[in-house]
Image (cartoon, rainbow, N blue to C red; front, side):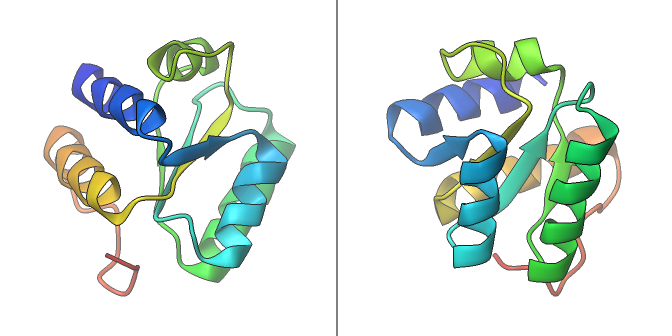
Length: 112
């Protein structure tokens, strides 16, 4: 997770991510979200809403630590969900997630 959180920090400083449920949902709907990261301790109704939108719009979704860890990674308070809006950062994160999770959790029809 440390590498992923470092990448999130870089993306945040570059202005290439959005956080918060409504902003992330807006990014998913508009096609500007390339990967969505959800905290492991997200409320079940929020997790379902985000998961359903990601499935419908074919945006990769992954768990990425606790809300405190996500917030700390981007230099903010606790965050439940983050969308990366840059294809380059997203591609790097996806490669790293594949390696550390030991499996291909993204299907080949997703963007990137």
